[in-house]
Length: 111
Length: 115
Image (cartoon, rainbow over all chains, first blue to last red; front, side, top):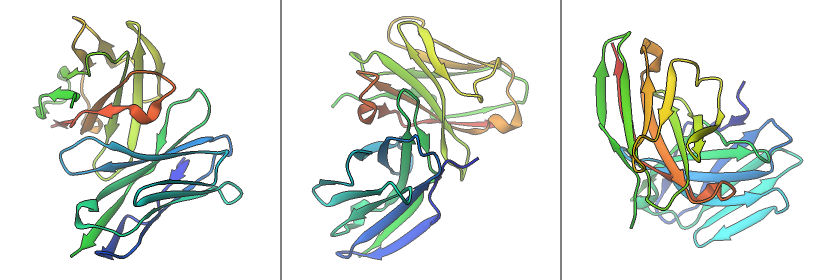
């Protein structure tokens, strides 16, 4: 039962262009969403979050958009940099519960 | 910058053997977690621990698993009798507060291979 889906296992983007990573969820009770970034041989690190009361949250080059009716969120990175190459995990939770992670999308930013 | 550390980085064991994975959370953190990631699959929550007891656990965390904070600095995950399907990367995490999940700091992981 995949409650959090990231249907693109990998994505390649040219340096300087926009990277868009997508995440879909099935549980309408989810009210808080995170994106984590993971480099090889390291643990996931927090990137950006969004609460269900918002539809957009921006932090520097990173913006997360939430479409509750579609149960869809996306992470935009602009401009993309080679150091952004990593696996990106979407995670979601309902109040009081622990996070459910998606399978991840491997982003490669090409110089 | 403070960080979560985990030892060993790699562990190879025979099926049926016991393994203990060790973690040193960030010193002022109060909440501790174990996650695992089977190769090519998503990160899965195993257990959370607060005030010297388990606060939540997932279906994966069955009787073969246990956690302990033996000495006020280490946080361990024990698998009593390992199975082939326990092969995964195991991540420890810690946070100051339960409600600020975004400040969960993850360790680098222990790669467990059960033969």
